[in-house]
Length: 503
Image (cartoon, rainbow, N blue to C red):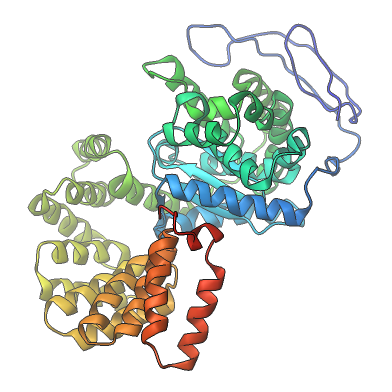
């Protein structure tokens, strides 16, 4: 695809569109030390966005590359897999995909535990958001804007198309290069930099980075899908300004997002122009209370449970200073105080939250979890059972209920509860670990090793998984279990079968 240049400011516009361009008066986009020129572009598109040129990789090759990049990322960073958070992100992502047309990939969304502002998509539909970036996105529109942009990179197959410049490089090596670029090339994140440099020289890796043209094309498609899904582009504009402000005001290093997503000033001008063209003066129905409350609830839970602890404590205390009876403020502060190991204070705030949100199983669950951490096994069991009876679906309900039963000496009940947990939440690793321990204490060693093998598989530690799976295979006489174990061994990554594997 070729692109046009307009004036002295580079604006990326596909030549295959029929265009009418009007240059209008300049003014500030936002308040910051350097003046930004705002060039209003009124673009009349006479044909659709069409499919991108045929990339260098086949769909199968791109899926293989995506899996290997995921393995690199998982090996370097911890994921937040809490379904209260991932469920909301997945819902928003699916809403965007529903209007994006048929896709050759099965999209997956991940949250990386890292304070660094970053979000990226790897080949074959793996979309990642750093917890630091999620923390500042306090509306659903903001998160939807980031997701739609990253989904658009996958739709355009930008990385796959750029691989033709490195087509002699093996897929496994490319996976390390791609992971290194997105995790923080140039020192922003040491693990990512090591991946990239170890796989290929930095100059050669750079050819896989997004260009200014890629970014504007992803914005074109992303904004279109965002609008179709019922979201405002103002959310994306706000979060991009927040990322940029971190660079200019007090940050010691450029946010990784700005390194992997270049031309932020051009993007801000383009998005601002798009809003003028498509949203100004048009009434947009507000989000339903149910949707807005669901996001606010998730965001409160996220900040209290996983956000920066110092900022979380300050944030919720500020809320409660303005309104001492705010139930979400009480809930969030209680969650943060658990992390600060101030359990008595946490109990006061969580009880206050439950008194106002007595029918919310998530809030009740966290009070039960707190009782478990305090060693109040009976109170924990009763509270967690209440959350379960309310229809609570969070895996921690069964997890802490089973552990409370075990601590209270009810091991048979605990095993039954944890078996229910892994049946209903098969991707919850901790359930396998504690079930393996309890079953092992009961003398069922084959089954115990099987559960521990599953735990290490889900924690991306293939060498330890292989050890336990082999032990289970040695000890079991159950033919169906033997078949499962042999299949698990066959599916382990090749590197895990080598004695030199570090995992």
